[in-house]
Image (cartoon, rainbow, N blue to C red; front, side):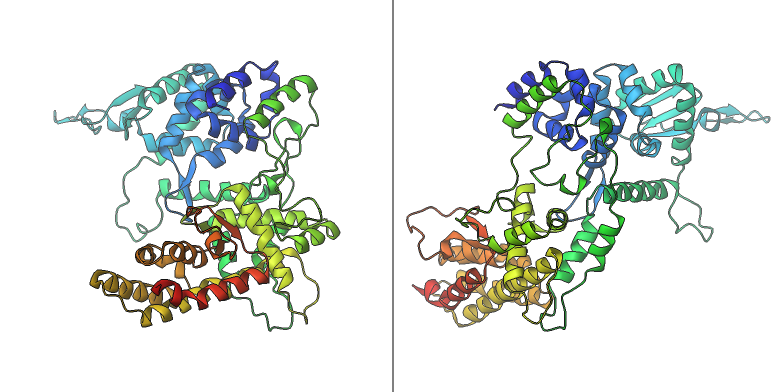
Length: 519
């Protein structure tokens, strides 16, 4: 469905003003993502401050690098102000006042420095000396309610000034609270007094804001990128010969701290699975089922709501996905659904595939596949464990027997390979060097770009090697013995490794690599 048609149908739904405040924030955010924030102004105006707080916890925080920690996106905050103001200053002020004031301070103070007017205005001393204004003449300025604003960036400047003028006139108490906090974080660098290396007020404010956000999201079931990366790194090195299964302190802390949080509209959300594609809104507490059903139908048709992950449900005889073991475990251990949701969150927050972040459905499928591999490779001398432990076993097997093994075997093959083309031979030497360096840190995926030289020798081998040495190793279709050779090579033509038989396919392929590259 085209985005414009979807949004048009949604806005024409009956009693939309009563339905939107009852939507889970995760669903509202998906609608905004699909339709675009600028086009979703009418929906944003109908949302409650509690909903918007949850949405902003996701939407205005972005990772600057893949897998990096999320940071406050100042420009995105400015766009939110402009969208809120499309419905009028009164609506924007109502939503703003309901948000965490520290978030508002962070957004405003990054767009403008705020000073007491008396502190920066020009004046004449008793000796008749004129002291000029301390406000820069090169930036846009505004005077509101005894404060001077100096623009730090042009985006959303006029919108912010208009909104602050409204707050000063209609909500003076809130305006003063906001301005006083902005003044405190607008001061310049500290003098060198022995404490100047400590965080200044603005930096401390951002640190506290990020910390509070992480605490809220942990209670909602999310995993921070730092925690996810730490878990994934530790899970690569499980000692399968030890006396018992691993017991991750990070996972224990996650489940210990996870507490139900009331959702918007009085419903109890399912936060641990909110990152998964089967998240469905809670129908409790809705006084207009017909209107809600109409909106739900529009959302389903647009792909905002999807069916449950194929790999986690159902117990049909045809196990084409190779998830029989994890299906049986889920059926006999009700608590394992939460464990799978946690693992999907970890993968989405702390891992990449093909050099990009995981999609929610991919993270869900990967978690199920890796758990199935872990259950199959479970050491016989261990007692039964949970899916978090099974995942760690499967992740260790993938790392050791697929990613590291493929990289080591490729280095050995390249060392014996001789090519008449001098440029290709030099690039092969470079690939061998990069792989050797990356293996010192057990991160062969960092040599991904250098693998491009393999395309010149054999494109199917290149596709397979990129998939096998990835941060999350997968089995590309070119490895399958039954693959149609005339079928075009696509980077997305892969499957997650869920069985030991697939690991054996990897070993067979790598043993034949030298022959394939010299044919």
